[in-house]
Length: 310
Image 1: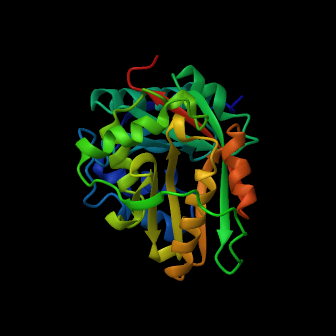
Image 2: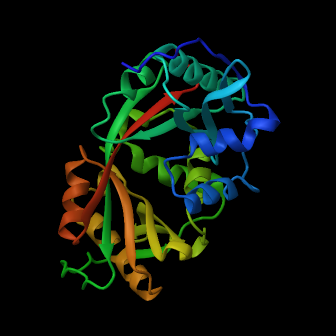
């Protein structure tokens, strides 16, 4: 249980005069450089109906800032929930009220999903989030491969394997990615929560998007999967944003071949590491990454709230 405040604060949209203080409060667990990066990321991104700070809400006690929450717009008609932070103690009622109000703001803006990440041992926030309509989607494993390490020797690629630039038009790319979602073990609970167009918008916003890093994987000229990479020059890394194989092409070692290509791209660009996140329940994928020499550096609980969920 969260400790009780002495008085019950009122919850409202953040006044302009308190915006900086509220943002500093809600982002206080981040280093200052990371706080600045979060705010800079709001410049110029397509946010749909949710304005950058319309989801910044505060709890006021006798007119003074007592707590804050932020549902931050993200590309792809989604939003990230920054868990409520308080000056002093925070009650269950105020915490739940802030989250409910933030979710209502997202619903009114037509946001498809709101997501948040928690530490694996967090016992405090999951019950509160579940009451507000969030679902536990997955335990995510954050993996890295250091480019100074040699690429693990792998079986030769199958005959007829080709990686070529993926179609740039949504209408052509959407069915290719959608086909790889069928029967996927990677966060299966997410299926159907978002339109494929918005999913791709979210993928495209990762790092520095370069069309040549989005690849269609083909066997004998027929699409068998997709590999979507993003470069992050500022953090000296390449991100494996998404990798998927069509059901009929699974089991033939394509995943390992795609990972090897991603490692080669990382080395060619002289980046320090290749990073990705995987659902720990996806045994087949995690086995591929382990075989390719990846190691885990963090875990997070992913919780999502679909639009209108109560």
